[in-house]
Image (tube, rainbow, N blue to C red; front, side):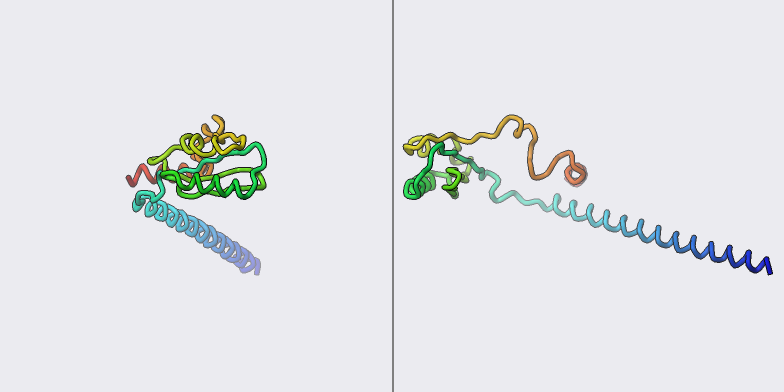
Length: 159
């Protein structure tokens, strides 16, 4: 009688160990599968990378130091938009900020500012990024993050 209880306990323990082993293998297999999908996704994205359509388009900003009425804001926008290389403009009248995009192969932010905004009759300054922000690099993807490092490794392997 004791032998059968002993065998029963061993059999139950083996069943539990087998379930734990199956669960562990399933989780490890799923993790491996997801990691493989991530690697394949990054490889496809890096390998088939086409030239960026707007690779030379940049944004610039001018901060006005005084309120600008809507008529003057529209005139400034139209004048900026008429310059060579300027793609779009947006005037935030609440914060007195003009944001514009331009093709840096055709024009520069300083040239656009000097030609139109500086001579608009309103006190303004051209917004420039601080040296600290420039040193940080791209704010969208941290180069020291896991995804940034993984992308760099994959790009070096594939390309």
